[in-house]
Image (tube, rainbow, N blue to C red; front, top):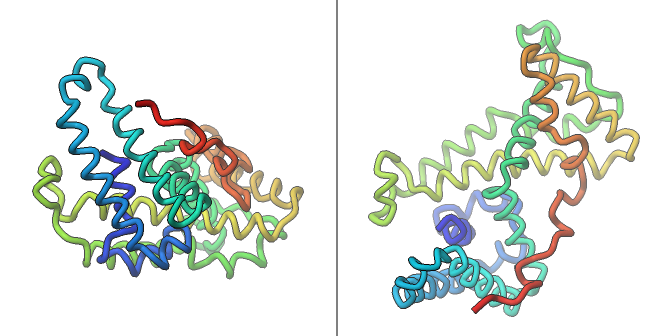
Length: 261
């Protein structure tokens, strides 16, 4: 059900003020009613098909295949109504933020490295600061709002303040004060802001300068953790995510393959 939960995120009324920060397709944000209708249809289709095919799904173990059919149908519907690019961008947004452990780790480590660039040298943590490369320095004021941990926490607190409590269907999450969708958006927020910072840097620097930023970030991560720093620095994935277009944007979409019936 994670895919359906992710598909619902751009349709949530209470989340509207925060959605522009998440890296979602602009056209989707301008007219969320279309996706809201498609999401409702997808939920209905999934529940109906699950009931009608429950015996077969249990025998063949292909509940995942049913979900793939439902999501593919939803994205195809979205492509018809809003264009293929919107549908593909939404698909890859979901995959990046909720199904890619590598991207999650990379955004976390990049966020740490970039925040170190702002530390005063004479502060406690600043003693382990590695001076950023010259090419990065003019961009630090520009990306400050994207990597500032206090600002991110303020946004997250505001999000949690307006998020509703879990509904009955989320009974496994009864221990949570807020709905599961709020947790998903909170996670996506950190990653989306860090990715935007990396895209900003990549758009302003040439290849050689980007390699200097990568080397600096690796060195910074290693300097702050003498025991595990090398392993953590590898999670940056070199310049893989320091690109104007993040990885995966040239990968095939489910729209490129026929749905198995």
